[in-house]
Amino acid sequence: MTATARIERIHARQVLDSRGHPTVEVEVHCQGGAFGRAIVPSGASTGKHEARELRDGEAEHFGGKGVLRAVSHVNTVLAPALLGRDVSAQRAIDRTLCELDGTPDKSRLGANAILGISLACAHAAADAQGVPLWRYLADDRQPLLPLPMVNLISGGLHAGGNLDFQDFLLLPIGARSYSEALEMTVRVYRALAATLARHGFEGVLVGDEGGFGPKLQHNEQAVQLAVEAIEKAGLRPGHDAALALDVASTHFYRNGSYHLHSTVGVSLTAKELADTLLHWVTKYPILSIEDGMAEDDWEGWVKLTSVLGKKVQLIGDDLFVTNPERVKRGIAEGVANGVLIKLNQIGTLTETLDVIHLAQQAGYRPVISARSGETEDATIADLAVATGAGQIKIGSVARSERLAKYNQLLRIEEELGKEAFAAWRPVGS
Ligand code: PGA
Ligand code: ZN
Image (cartoon, rainbow, N blue to C red; front, top):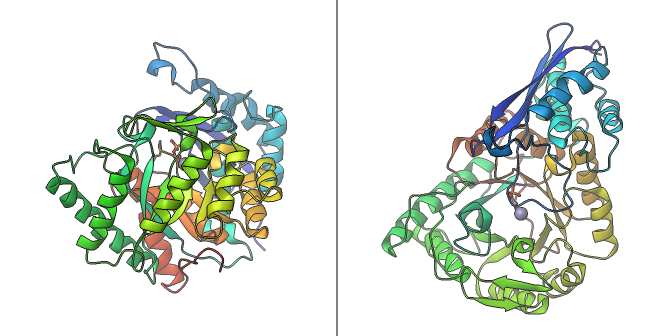
């Protein structure tokens, strides 16, 4: 038994994320010297039902995006309530944080303030026990390296609206280990740069998550170029490597229709969009589709799931926002079969772990995800391993805020061994 480590000091500051926007960093110091630090990420294509990050809104200070109020809530409201507490009592700490806020969406003190403390406490608790975070969080679960779902081409709000769909991603399904999956991905990414250049597109500039952001004629062209890149990399599409989409359709859904205006200039009903996606799934090696319908289009989701739910992984991101009530509704209505997990959508580590558990119990696949605004903080790599979630979505294999996580997974692989890897499981198996 390790002795209880009591929280001695908590300090927050404002730092910058990968878009140069301010975000919250929190440090937790314990008696005896244990220490933890965490930095909170931030989304751009956020769901309406997410917990609220607090921004100062003072135009003259970072264009209104400052987080000094959230920082001050950590330092003056939340920290004093936690001093002297056992840092490893995560559930109790997170409950206190939620109670002090008192709102359902953490809008009073800010989900960014609350999550910063919650995660920094976990890091400090792991340090107090002298174990890496993934081992501390794993508890009695079997730790597993996740299969990465990696951004190749970016569109939507992450690349200036060049395409309607947001992410065209690689699933290196033939990989036998995490490091092999990563190496295969880099091969395809490099091949895609050359493929784009050959077709006369910009093959160097990247979007917010490191994916290429070419101005293509239509969404389907991105899929075709990705398949071509897989072949150019010497891999077999559908065998060694497949594709995933994040349609992020909430962001082009208005008045009951899906407006594909950046590219083909048409509006589709939910049924038409579902049929288009079904057509793509039959034509291309697409195994996973995220946010194929908008966040509140539950009817559309029912249609999409009936059309595709037995064939491919259907992930709810804006739909579920890592919120237990929304995930429970999805399970009850048989909507989707996967849940994107983003810590800052719900705002505490405990609630996130509970949602992962809820998804796993119902046979829904959890996919641990970064945000488009990230930092060097690599907590989600450890979270993915500890929960045995099986999949992780971090962005592309470029930009160091992405590589911080990919590289952390390489370190963990060295400790766990290559065989502790969650190979791709076809849907329905
Ligand atoms: P976001 O994008 O972090 O901008 O919300 C990620 C996603 O939609 O999966
Ligand atoms: Zn998404």
